[in-house]
Length: 307
Image (cartoon, rainbow, N blue to C red):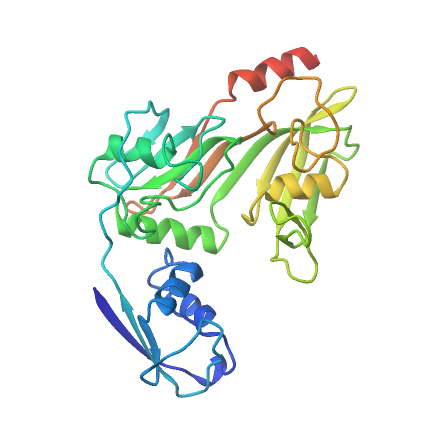
């Protein structure tokens, strides 16, 4: 457990308490999310001028904020001997090739069989504790039905380093996907903010008013009569980003039942999307490391059929 004290400077006058803490801790503890501080505030572990306030409290210059950050606790999630397709591993991290249908961390309805259950068994006691009991070692996610490369951190130092690279958008993330329709231009960029859908809370949407900045670059790899095989590169990493952006320009991903009303001629489990390549500066050596996951068998079969 550690305690940090801050005096609010003029530039943060009027800022929300939870957002302020997220901004202040970015430099030293980038893995600590805004939701983490909201939880601390609810539990009374944050005071402003010796009083507990809500996360929405608007700060005043010279406010004194005291934050008590608890030690990482042992995870209650049960390790499970689930085979992992490990693309790279060393003492600081591993990159796994997540299969289709696997949830990254436990949640309602997915208490077991997750990537976290698998890496807990594989890594034993060597996982970052920054993200708490349910998400040890997890610094980013990909959707349940998206396959491909995902980093798992073995210690807090690696977690903070990778999280900071993700925050400043320096991590290279290239995806492969098959979209509905034929895209005429060779390359393009979708620059449109993404936020929660105003009506359907299970979905994300291009949301100019309440969304966060989101940028997806794409290029055509091959065209077919009704579909296009594409590569995507993320500049940001919003929830469902590629799926939302491609649907917004009239080319939803093949098999994406959430963002497309069209029926697929193939028996698919969700969208045809694969996180192929991830590149980053290694937290210990500071040298650039790039890891790629091969296309899954179902994806290769569809491409062969389209020919």
